[in-house]
Image 1 (cartoon, rainbow, N blue to C red):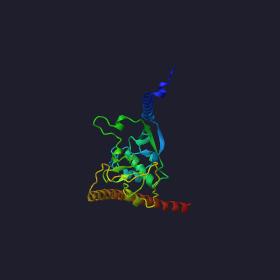
Image 2 (cartoon, rainbow, N blue to C red; image 1 turned 120 degrees about the vertical axis):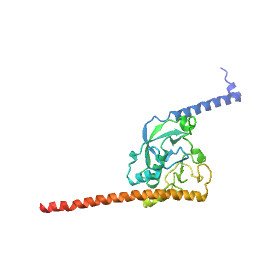
Image 3 (cartoon, helix red, strand yellow; image 1 turned 60 degrees about the horizontal axis):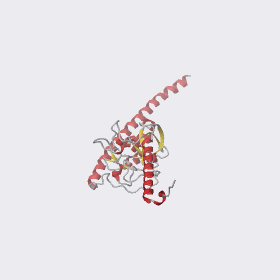
Image 4 (cartoon, rainbow, N blue to C red; image 1 turned 90 degrees about the horizontal axis):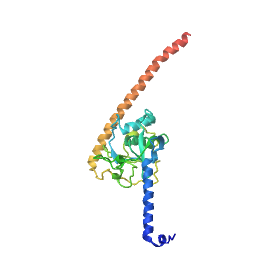
Amino acid sequence: KNTSYFVGDSAVKREMVTKIERTSGQRAETNEETAGSGSEEMMRMSEIRFAHNDNTELFKDRSGSILETAVQLLSGEVSPDAIPVFEVCLHESKHYTKTGNRRLAAFRLAQLFAPERFSHVRVKLVQVNQVFLVGVGNGRAKLTTQLNGPECEGKWMFIKETQERVGITLDDNTYGRDLLELMLPHGTANNSFNFNVVLTSPPSSSTGKQPGAAALAKRRKLANRRRRKEMERKLELADKGKAATQTHQAGKQPEKSLKSKSR
C-alpha cells in the first residue's frame, strides 16, 4: 500500500496526533476515576491535601473541635485508631480528602508538633465523582481549594471562626498554635512537610476579601479566649482526677504495711 500521504499531508498528521492525545487523556481520566477500590491503607500525611478552602472548627458528626482533637491526639488521650477513617481520592495525580477535612486538620496539627508520631494516617481510597468535582443540583462541589488561589492546591485550609489556617508548615497564622505551644512547651514543631513545591504566603482570607484588622484581631481574641478557657477547664479536671487517684492509692498503702508487719 502507498502510505506516503501520511508523511506529506500535515493536516492528516495533525488530526492523527490530536486523536492520540485525546485517547491518552481519556485513559488518564479513566484511571483517576477508577482509582480507589474502597480499601483502607496507611498513607503519608505529606501526600494528603485538603479539598476544602475553609471550614468551621467544630465537628458536625460528633462533639469536639479540630483543636481539641489535636490536643487529645498529642496527649495520648485519644488513639489515632479511635478517629474515624476518612476518604481520600486521586485527582490530577494528587490525593485529596473526599471526606474528613477537619479530621485531616487535627492530624496535621498533631503532625506539626510530633512529626515522628504522626507521619502516617489510615485512609480509605475511593473514586472521584461528580459530587466531589462540581457538586450535584444546588449542592456545592467538595473540591473548593482553588478559591485560595492557584498556588494552594490543598496545602492549607482556613478556619472560618478565626481566619487562621492549618497548613503544611508552622507559622504565625497557624490555627491554635499559641494554645498548643502553651500546653506542649517541649513540643518538637518543625516544617517537615514537602510537596516538592515552594509554599508561598496565602491570602489572609479564603475568599480574597481582606477583613478589617481590628475586626480580625477581635475575632481571634474571642476565639482564643474561648478555647483557652475550655482547655484550662479540661486540664483542671484532669489534675483533679490524678489527685484523687493518688489520694486513693496513698490511702491503701498503710493497710498493706500493717498486714506485712502482722505477718
